[in-house]
Image (cartoon, rainbow, N blue to C red; front, top):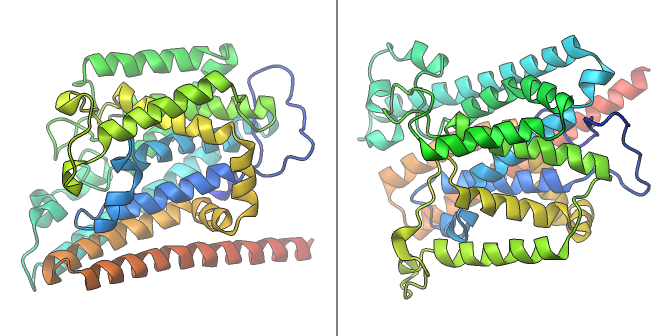
Length: 388
């Protein structure tokens, strides 16, 4: 969910010496491709009746697409604004951050309006489960100010508010990194750890007594890890160091995560989970099991030159990267499509015909939108060059 300025185009670092350019390294498409995968999985996962969501990463690990999205949001945010503070000045970058937050807020408003008006209209023709919209939002207009002030966060419409809060706190993180390279990450980790010991520390949510589903005090650490990793890869020339021990440890943890998290009984198989139900990693306050899962995935991809090459040269890698480059638009449209898919399933059934139709149409719309946005951006750039 990042603007063009937030894409992989270079970033600042905290050290006094500017990074040295690395020969043979162009744009790193791995981040865009991973973000594209996360967006497509979010579209699939947000339709509970969708049989395709049995094959997304949440079934083969503790983490899911939300963790990937937030980590990459932090990574891209550093690239967009880190170097800019020194290159363009504080006022200019603060304006850019504010403008991006406004864009995210508009996206949130569009989704809320689409959900409310669609559900209210659909209810005139057929019953609609309250799961699609909180009862408080299905009646009257007294809820509007709460939603607009993020005092009420409806289900499936709660990740953009988190992103706005995290992006708004980026200048503070930058200041702490300027004081000392590790200070910001250490403080961020301490807050995350404290929340894991006391999950009641959270932002209030009028619709949920437990607060925000994505607790900002916990999820800010994942965002901070992305920011720090971005600065580190810039300093090193675009890749995290590939350490054999870390690669093996990451792979072993992901194998354990896959075995422990896989829904064996859902597939009619014996339960091979080594710890049974004793491990239930909480998503709200970002359990360490979920954190380690997404960090392991990120490290394996960002330390792999083969992954860089695949994202840059393969047709599939470029298609996914194109989706990731327009993440805000893809997320907003995908979230609205999720609602219509759920309503269609609940109204007309969940047969194979509708399963195939909903997934093909939904994914085709998202791929077409990404291609159209990419082509429009290319035309705009060409026009700008021609005008000079």
